[in-house]
Image 1 (cartoon, helix red, strand yellow):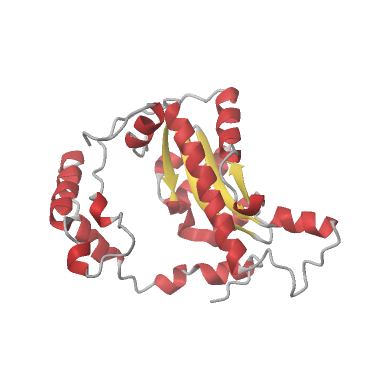
Image 2: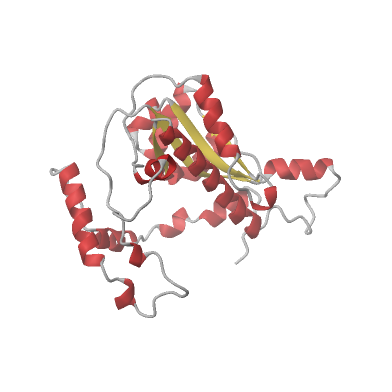
Length: 259
């Protein structure tokens, strides 16, 4: 990393790590307003602003989300959000303008807008996360909230043309985990075209396996974790994957997910 340029923004991003233990101190209203405003300034496809975020403040609801995620720290996170792709608001705006949202010509419930709204929600979450780190806070992104999407939809009372994307827990850090190693740039950044063969693509994998293995061993020697490539192999097979498919639940929310 000797050639990397540094400034406050770059260092904030380079130093980011997931924080799963927070000091039980509330965050001031000005911090909340700042984080939410920053999220609103993220890029938005066609400026449709097709995402929303539900701020979770009810302790009982936090506990229920914690059970879905099987992550106890969620129940005590000082600040907790669920980011949602949201075409419901735009559908309501279109209806106000006389658009028949039940017609076949209605486009905001299609696959393209679903994907773009999901992208916008992730961009907004990442902007909020980066801002939080820059203020000395810690965060963890919560994909585990999608363990039970239907229950999450029900708990948050999400209407038609919405779908949960990710959660974000924020607070003052009460731990200092080591930085997780990153894949060699040569395995993720290519010039002009994708590598012509897998042997070239996977150059550096062995060394990366060793770095990841060492990282997890140092973090918790009593709970050894497989090398990166073994983790990929484990996650590449799941006999219950069809039960986790997005399409059936997304259709229940009113989206047309054509292939």
